[in-house]
Image 1 (cartoon, helix red, strand yellow):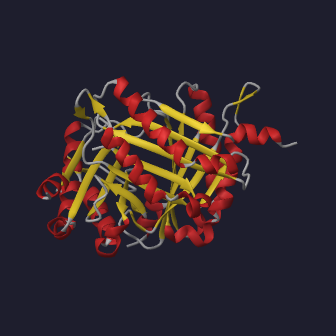
Image 2 (cartoon, rainbow over the protein chains, first blue to last red):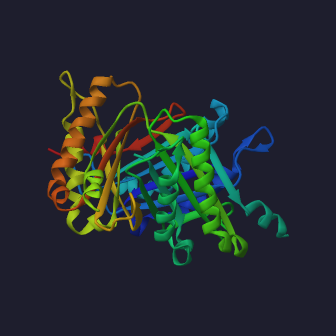
Image 3 (cartoon, each protein chain N blue to C red):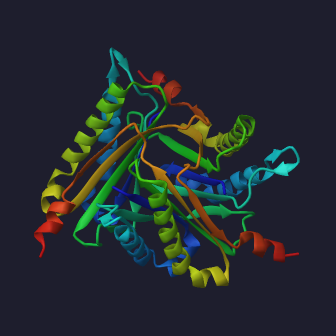
Length: 132
Length: 132
Length: 132
């Protein structure tokens, strides 16, 4: 159950098209393969608006997007590296125009869920299989 | 100082009653016992609305709630397991109607605070003790 | 790339001046030194509003602010301790009035980014250097 959470500064909201970005990053995750097998299922991506923020010395002409991907433990370093590279390429591409126009800080971290335990309950697989 | 943070898709906001859910999950945490002793004090539960998100392949007919519980290190595996089970039962019960009606993905992780340090300052114990 | 994220209860929004708090905490991070060298660069601080929440037993007369600082691995315990102390002093000072007036729980954790990897792309250094 990969969970990708974006936190972003409110000054990017108007032009950031975060709905499209979430969709694009979900597609990137769905496309990851380990050999012939998909690496991730039951993907969830979301973006959280931060009304109040301060970047570097508080320059008004700057925005940020920070992404945190949490995945189950046990994937190889190569798989994690490829996932991070692909997600981050998509983020850079999505914000290429803003990067030229003003201060922008993009960042991504990949983390594994804690060993203390995870619980899940969803009907996504069942519901999607019902569809032709 | 257990901290429980929910992130949820905006399509669940209207019917999700997250205020009641936060209260219910706080009650679940307060009820946990290790022998005769309460396991948790100074409980804080909150829910964060995610306006933009993508679940699986972007099907509009799906919502998600992800919960992350962070606790101090050192509880036994049995205590952590019982806590997670009780919280997740409450989440499933709270959303039983939505689970029947549309796509829904519920998840929970339990994590320990980093060894790098925590700081706390609160007047909750003092204030609550003052009350009859 | 230090990332500081605050989550706070909505009842603190009106009087909390989170824009000023974010700026103050960024200044605290920028002021940290290890010997003569700044410890942190490309600082990002943000605050996330939590509309729904429950503190302790749900007493309406209580608010919370929880801060999580994520930093790259490898700083000494002394540096991490000094950083946490300085940030938390600033938080306590910022909310001193509220602490006298009603229930308030402040907390801070310091964590290191996962070993699974981080990615970054920003033009902040270049842009700030251009300025006189």
